[in-house]
Length: 428
Image 1 (cartoon, rainbow, N blue to C red):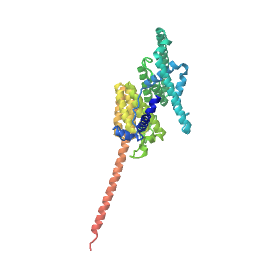
Image 2: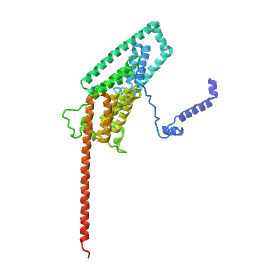
Image 3: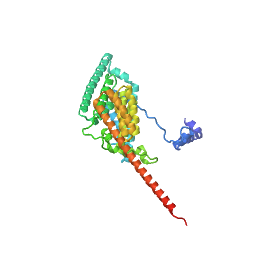
Image 4: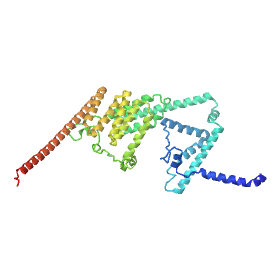
C-alpha cells in the first residue's frame, strides 16, 4: 500500500477533507422547531410530545418480577447489586443539586455502569437462553412441575390468610366507627395489594371485592343519624345534619382569566389541593383498569368526595352521577344512595333548595328499597331542614321586597309633593 498511497496522496487528501466537510454539515445547530418546520412535522413545539405507556398495576408487578427472575437466573446472588444500581441512578441522596460537578459525574457513571451490566446480561442470555438455563437446573420435568404447584398452593394459602385478616380488621374498624381510618385502609389494601392478585392465586377475588366495598358503604351509612335535641330552626341546620363543614359552603373558588392562581401549578403551594389532585389522579388511574361495576362506583364516589372537600361542587355532582350509573349496573342500592348523598351535600352547600329537594326525593326512594327505618328518619329530617330553609329564604325575600316597595312609594310620594309645590309657585 505504500507505493499506492504515494502515487494517490492528493486524491486521499481530497477525500479526507470532503468527509470532514460532510460530517460538519450533518450536524445541524438550528433549533428543533426550524428543522421540524422544514420537514412539515411541527412548526410550534420545540419538544415532541411523548406518549406515556399506561400499564396496569398487575403488568407493572409482572415486569418487576420478570426483571428479578432474569437477574437471579444469570447472576445468582449478585442480582441484588443490579437492583441497587438500578435504583441509585435516580437517588436524590446521591445526586444532590447543591453538588454541581460531582452530581453530574455520578449520574454519568451510574448510567454507564448500569448499561454495561445490561449489555453483559444480554450477552449471557444470547449465549445461553433462559429456558435452557432452567432446563439445565431442573432436568426432571415432573419434579419441576411439582415444585411449581407447591409454590402456587403456598401463595394461595398465604393470600387466603391475608384476606381473612383484612376482613377482620375491616369489620373491627366498622364496629369502632372509625370511618376515616377504615376508608384509608380499604384504599391501601385494594389499590396496592389485591389489584396485583390474579384469579389463579385468588379465586375468590370477586366475592372479596363485594364484601369489602359493601362493608365500607355500610360503615358510611352508619354515620347517618339524627342527634338528640337537634333544632331544625338553627342556622345551616341541613349542612350540620349532613356533617358538612359550615365554612366551606361560603368558600367557593372564583376563577379569573389570566390570574396565576387559576393554573393547576398553584396547587403545589397549597398542600391540601396538591393532596386532593394526587388522590384524584390515583382514583382515575385505577378506574381505567377496574373490571367490576361495584369497584367503579366506589372509585367515582371517592372522586366526588375529593372534589367536594376542595369545594368543586360541579365536578362532585358529575362524578356522583357517573357513580350512580355504575351502581345501577351492579344493582347496588347502597353505593347508589351514597352517590345521591354527595349530590345533596353539593346542592345544600350552594343553597340550591329546589335541587336539594329533588335529590332528597330520589334518596327517599332508594332508602325505601333498603328498608332502613333509621335512614328514613334521617332523610325526613333533612327534608324538614330544607323546607325550613325555604321558608326562611321566602320570608327574607318578601321582607326585602316590601322594603324596596316602601322606598319606591316614598320616593314617588316625595316627587309628587315636589311637583305640586312647583306648580303652586306663581309665575311672574
